[in-house]
Image (tube, rainbow, N blue to C red; front, top):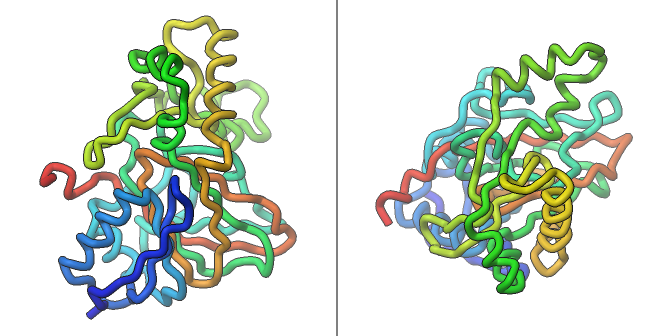
Length: 282
């Protein structure tokens, strides 16, 4: 069994901790699973090194937190494991996640968490940056916080438009994609259901418009928020190594996968967890 005596090393004051002395290829005890969950709530993203796991191990770890998401609307799955997404990028398939985003916020209920495992990494580059939307909210001037508290924003396919519109001329593919995946309206300021911290819920990838404002004013305020959110004080940067793993709380974070490693290849496996199985128990 995996040891219950894990070690945590906080990486920045705002976000991130590295976990050691745990082997995720072995079954987790309930105590250890709860300890990892509590650390995730506190630090928002956790990193593990040297985890030589199988897709079955990956799924077991994900299920200790909640229900794995069905196949992704865009990315392919690992053969035989529809819940495990394969992100394989290289010269023939350039990366498309090199922008700040919170996963799938165009859905009415965006997922709770994502668990990313490195199967193959480049010799240099390919880091992922994470930021704390809670830290970003807490660093805002009080006047701006007050202005935002009752505001909501429209989220839609955003950057995924590129996938559906590529090599198209009449817009039919985009129309079909919007009909299939839709849009969502979310409060700009939300309260974390476990930690109780308030956080901003906007991201460059999918947030399109602040309701009640003209497009020009909405764009100006969103640009201000994106600049504020992406300040280094809210961030942590993770340098991947083979078989490293990251799990992040998608509710209160955004991330950015740097695309600086071509022509080398980067292969990652990801499971998205739909719901927080513990949230109603807290």
